[in-house]
Amino acid sequence: MPRGNRELIFPKHFDGKRFYNPTAQQASGLFNVLRWKLTSRPEASPDFVDDVKPRVPPKRIEGSGLRTTMVNHSTVLLQERRFNILTDPIWSERSSPLSWIGPRRHRKPGVELDNLPAIDAVLLSHNHYDHLDLPTLRQLAFAEKSTYVVPSGVGQLLRSKNIGPVHELDWGEHCSFPGFTVHCVPAYHFSSRSVSDRNKTLWCGYVIETEDRLVYFAADTGFGPHFAQIREKFGSPELALLPIGAYEPRWFMGPVHLAPEEAVQAHKILGVRTSIAIHHGTFALADDAIDTPRRRLSECGKPDSFLVLANGEYVETGI
Image (cartoon, rainbow, N blue to C red; front, side, top):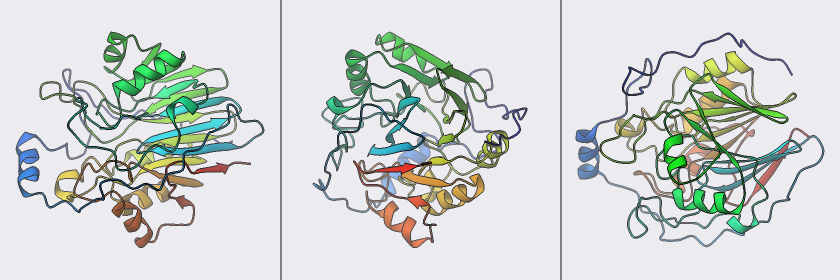
């Protein structure tokens, strides 16, 4: 597989106290959060959509292919002969620090937690509750000994909950496993789990590299030059997981979440063979309803190689 320019250095993104998005608009502050909440006109989502048929994925994959199963939201199970990898796992009923308040799920997961195969690596992109769900991580850690890959500063939280082992990475750093390497790459987003810790930990995407394929997990991100930088550094991925949801209103969400048409643009910039839409269909986190991103993606001229999978659906690539 041809590789890119490995000497490319990602831009500075830490001022000594807090992380930031280089050469880009930063996430809105508290004033704009209040403005959004006071003026919000969210589209209505159904209370619950009972259209998911959970699947039982294989324990391991043989052969040369890559099997990608959409679980829910940004939780994806990636399987090939060298690994079982899980991204940003959430099985909780709510995306919240509390079990009785906060965004509730509108669809069930496409794979039951007890039916997961043994997971070699869990990739966590940042510390927001819909991406770092401690109840789910505790269950995973109790069931098996996976390795957790997290951006700078996030490891402390996991270690405090006896979740590990943990590899903590900055943009441009990597960790190696038998048969594959995980690279930490830029995303344009922000971090916080409370009002006092904003941007004290990093956010990121990941590139998974083997001897014959690249997989890119974009996680949460706004649009920016990092897509071109990632292609220049690594080459074009075989598969990309690109977010399409929680994008309205644009004045507020634009710096940190892709709109569907921006995801299509990122797909083209990356030169990716197949993209799969994530960050939609399960939790209503912004003014767009849970199924609006899927419809808008179809309306904005997405290529056939940009797929939208229902929870529980899978696709096999690279065979």
